[in-house]
Length: 445
Image 1 (tube, rainbow, N blue to C red):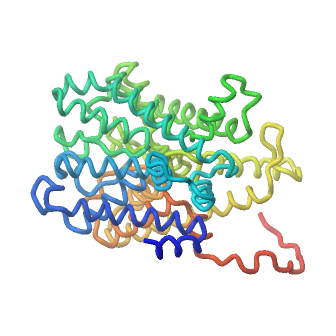
Image 2: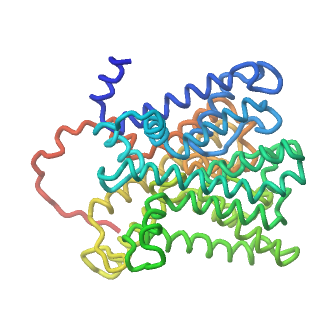
Image 3: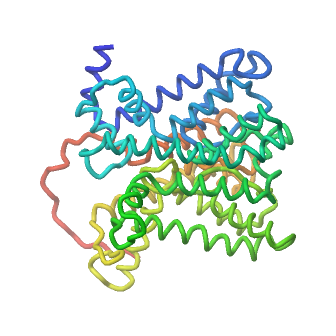
């Protein structure tokens, strides 16, 4: 153990984060392979267990076996723990365990924690960790308590309580795993499409988990004094509101045009919230038009916000890209948001993230389409869901070959740890401060 600790000290924080997620995925895979983890003893092979563990730790929700009917109560409990660890972050949980045991948090651990949750500074990181844990358990507890009466009436006391807890954690962590398969495999929450309690609670948990703990800290400190919020919080709240409202209007008038008014509103709102990046659904997505499917793909790629339980490129990345484009259109030197100038490094990072996501999402979809002989749009939907750690599906995931599943496993892992994190972990820092080459103009656009 001492030798392992000494080796970790020589790794960059991003490398430790990557290894941490891999270790948890490996442990989850082994636990799910145990004979009593599945309802039919020993039926969970390595491939299914690895895919499920990766999906849970990366809070994605894509599955190759129905969670309710394939996994035993032990297996479901393992999945829930993996979701919680993946949603909070491996090192948030590690720091929490250290705090409970009374161990001192050293500078190296604080540095890794700062990198893990994208905190702006290392000062106060332990206090912020406590805030994350308190916020998480309070929100999940409230969500479970609100949904419990509905699930108890539907499933009985034991299963109802377990379902309320499971879905509350899954929703807050933006995971999308569900236990509704006994009413129809891979049914998700379609049975509760007209239930306002389940719909509103799940949506609230997704949004709260997806806007990020830094934003909630800002809200806790400054209340409703919006002018005091930092720029990132203002951007996150504005973009989040827009990404809920605009797609909901389209879904209401373009997709869910039949049925009672109230159900249409719930369906429209839920399908605009869940792609970022929860993975539950209350409508049959295979019946949506190609335009509706494309809208869902865009929402899945954007995802949630930094320092949250959500994945995707992040709302701030989209905001910076639009601000940069706006500056070019208006022939201004600097990109600006809410009266503040955006640093060039943020713009370069946003452009790199967009290129990474579009390339991997597009290439992954094309390879799967070629290997499986499936429509390209359906395959792009699956790869967008994987890299955005969403979990929505067109129903093709369980039937994919090992090659295609491997692609989705990689995309889920990439989407959870972050593209730049993976690159920074593998690229040497040598040469970053070297001299600059001569400049020459090149025409673009």
